[in-house]
Image (cartoon, rainbow, N blue to C red; front, side, top):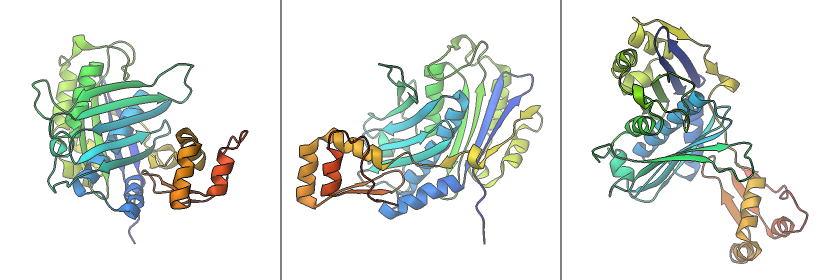
Length: 327
């Protein structure tokens, strides 16, 4: 019996160089996401690969900024994939989903999936857990093309471009995913002063000028997707950086590491129904007999019958009644 190894995150620094790195391997977490999706029908292979890469990238970015809130990575556009989303919480709980509205070719890349007419976008949103009154989430949006308006075919290219444009930080990102593993390697130049966070300090004077970063990034670029997916972290880091002085930190695994978890709940669904209004919800009850809501991320089903809806809209009810949520 094959036992799936736990998902893990490795962080490291290059001694004497202004360069940091992270390597993530989503194994059980990624397989759990795909397994739950099968209930509603599997995504096409290119969409599964994209979502796996987004989940890995989201974990890397969340770990990089140490943000007390959700990091939401979205790509959306005008192709057969209308939207793909990965969300990562501060404790590295990750979930991902996509909305597919047309046929996706077996060899489809980013342009063919989301950027057919040049309208594709990538958005990164930081949603704080403890918002101040009137505080809005931070969001950065970039197109799915480069400086010469050339369509970008890989998510890694889009995110490297985002980091360069929005944060003025040199970044090299390698991403890959199949049905067993979603993995990513991030190499980034450290800002000279202060911390470089999304929406934070600017470092434009140093773009492309760090010989140390350029050397390490060139080594990272030799890593193939197959190697990233099949080799363990120890082997990858040794093969790439055996001539460098690498300071490794304790890997994050299990409850401390990346894992699948969904933040949906009956209470949240109830709040959404209250937002629709009593009249619209009653119309659904009259037509269908009950309201059925399924979570796109985890597949949980929430049912609200006539009694549930009555209680939901009763003044003083702070929480929806405890009818079933079926996984």
